[in-house]
Structures are given as C-alpha cells and as structure tokens.
Image (cartoon, rainbow, N blue to C red; front, side, top):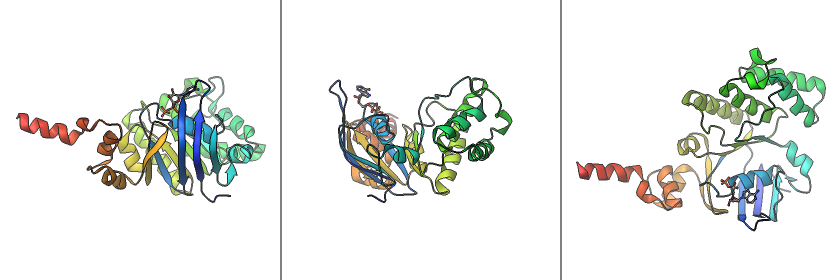
Length: 259
Ligand code: ADP
C-alpha cells in the first residue's frame, strides 16, 4: 500500500476502438504537492484523469489514491478524490445550495455535516448571496466557483482540476488561482491539467509532460527547461511537441535581424 497521494504504475488504456490512449504511464504525487500535467490535445490527460476517478477502466497497470486501489477499492479511492471537470456540468434546475448538498449526500455525508460544509463553501467562494438561486441564473464566474466548491464538498484529499481556467477572463483566472493556492496551502494535494504554461509555472511545484500516451519528462519548470536545453517552460513544451521554430525568443531574434 502506497503512502502517495496518487501512485500510478505502468498504466495502460486501450479503448475498444483500438486507440492506445495510455501506454505505460507511471506517476507518483506526494501528499500536499501541486502537480501539473501538460500535453497536447489527444495526449491522454483526460483518460488518465478518468482512470483515476473511476470513470474509465484501465486495461493495464495500477492506480492508488492515498493507498486505496482505484479499481478494487473504488469506493474508498473515490472518496479521496474531488474532480472539477473541464466542462461546467451543473444541473440547471438545482440551486447553488442544493448542488452542494446533493453532492454531499452522494458521498454519504450526514445531513448536518452537509449543511455546515455547504454554508462554509458558499462563504469561501463568495456565493452565499446566491445560495437559493438556480445554477442556470449564475454568471460564468459563479458557475466555475460552484464547480470547484462542489469538488471540495466531501473534503477530498486529492483535488483534480481539469483545465479549470479554459476560456475564462483574466480576473476570474487570477481569482481561481488564488482559491486553488489557498486550498493547496491548507493541505489538499492538487493535480492540474492546463494548456496555459504560465498557469503551470505559477502554481505547480512539479510538472509532467505527457505526449502520445507516455510521460516524456517530469520535474520543476526549471528542470524541464534544463532537460530540453532551453530557457523556459514554454520552450521546453515546444521542444516536446516538435515545434521549436515557434519559440518566442526565436521570433524576436528574427524580427531583430529583419530590422
Ligand atoms: P487529452 O485529454 O490529452 O486531450 P484524451 O485522453 O482525451 O487526451 O485522448 C487520448 C486519445 O484517446 C485520443 O487519441 C482520443 O481520441 C482517444 N480517446 C479518448 N476518449 C476516447 C473514447 N471514449 N473512445 C475512443 N477513443 C478515445
């Protein structure tokens, strides 16, 4: 039994279509870490998240969440994980308060604990005034905050954030960064996927690059830059996807020559 927050060994996922989305992925995330998973579309990030949260069945390897086997001890593993999915999948007919309460009920929280936790989270995410409003009437920013609050309702030790800031404006992005940093500082382990390299740089202590269903490199932002022999995380990412010619330092250099 592992003492890691997430202990993934040699994970494989082959969809019935024959696509091999994961080809021997191994990752260890320590309790309390803020860990980033970066890679191009189709690299296998969602599949890895789905396998870790029981939404997809791996075809090989193993996953443990805080020592609980994600397949054979699914209920305990699932209790340890909160997932804030990329798409805002709120029930439009529930109020903000009901959204949290029902989620708590799904995770077996007693009524009183649900009520207290709901109040606390509405307060934390500045949604108290909207408690009785149906989710469809909330602004985009409020919906994003509610999705995050819902993921935290059952006090998961591992929070998975799947592109939490895709398509949001800069104020909301910074606001969400502030929340997730606070949650991490309070002890929750976080796994983040994002396409925003500056987001990963700002938030994550360790980052894995995934490409074509395999982990290509792992380390701090500086480690990854050094590994690819470049100046920063963005250039390391461009090296990963074989697009070094897009490096901004290179583009600036060319402009200088042209001038
Ligand atoms: P990412 O999240 O990094 O964009 P995905 O995990 O969604 O990558 O996809 C990895 C690969 O698996 C892609 O080739 C994708 O087309 C394929 N894939 C994802 N979901 C399914 C599915 N339900 N059935 C068949 N193939 C899938």
